[in-house]
Image (cartoon, rainbow, N blue to C red; front, side, top):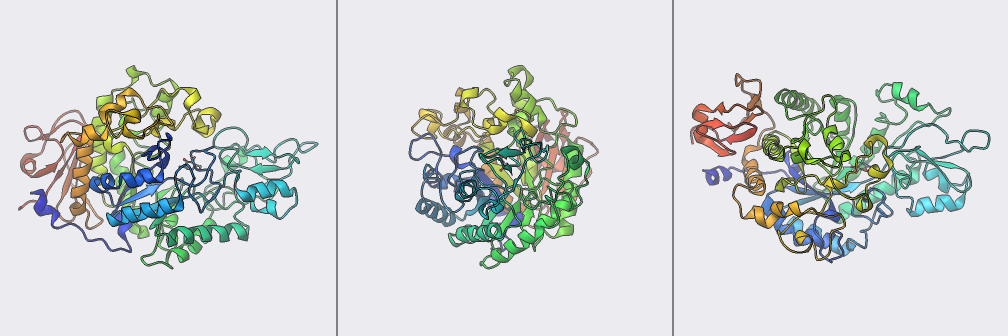
Length: 557
Ligand code: NOJ
């Protein structure tokens, strides 16, 4: 039956391909290592192009691959228009674009505009040129407070711990919202604005289809003195006038970017990483005059819970209908505990995603986690998500049901969040960035010839691609089949809820008659006549088992 259904696959308009795309996030340093130095690279992506095609995704999003000292996993960029020599060359990048485009896979790259690396030539020039120089104006330098300026300009904290200000040799201070090695740009400066337009054109000219914008809500700042204190900042509303976050004036930047995107045919696309207070504020980033789309992290920070899922889905679909963009769904990325692990841990009420943080901080005790449950729920949540209108962002390794690695020794860890604390509370993000297992045997499980840059546990063998590809019941087989069928299911961007008589069972129908049912509970759910039309997911004697999702084809076939 599925082949008949597949003949009705959606045709995508090249200008709006992103609206319901399945986008696969590659964290390049941990995907595949072609040159055997222990670090993933761009030729590694090329070597796995067939794998990506077979998976059935529409696009890849590459986390930063630019030259970087890796103070923050590549989000400290030293040169925005180049490839880190450890990861390859621009020619390798062109070969990668060609290999992916040949297979119908589009490419999104990460743009990090809030801050550069402290090794960026502009920052080095600013340090050398000294106080009062034009070079310092591209960043945010201030005199300190206290008798001799020995105190920072304000008591603001950095996301990775400590003060948000760092003192330089001549006594001035610069602002860094993240790591010390990530100085914030001054977005009032015309050079900064012009240089990012150049970067967008540089990659667009090389054939990149779109951009993911890092902390898109933080670029513009009102640093009128006296600077508010941290406590004062916390008390201010996020209404577009907050001095540091989600300011209305940031959209002037994205309107300019949109004009650049629209110089291309088809227009380039953008997706904002914007941690803002409401779906309404998020919609501003997703407007057609702005970036076009914004990440919706609501499911990522939700428990495996029918009521939470239903509210989040309904709110976001209503919001996207009002804004004209399509919504995005995410369960995992390079910043959070993998969802197959998260869902196996007891929920911490009111502290979304924090159960993973607490577990990792405790060293990953095995008696806290039910790994089978985690994987079962992860598969159910993913199938539900892939059945929703909008686009789905998948993180490398989740298609294998890969688990978070909790017990990485401190001397092998890389994430500044682990060493410096801050908002991340001593939680390292290395555990979701451990290189992928491609084969059950061999050095670094087929990731490359050398030991991987982050240690892989022995348990990775059972998640290896070659093991899962040979098993029709594996998570990989499930993702492949879901992504194949998704091309039929994703037509009109709507759904209608069908009542199930059970608070822990969600069911919705898409306009073309496809139905998705998820049982969040522990008691089986009777599917009645629909049981005969299941094309994906488990069924047991006509019932939907606990913690699982099925896709049901339209009646009359
Ligand atoms: C968000 C990125 O996803 C994260 O990995 C990074 O540390 C911060 N932005 C700072 O660039």
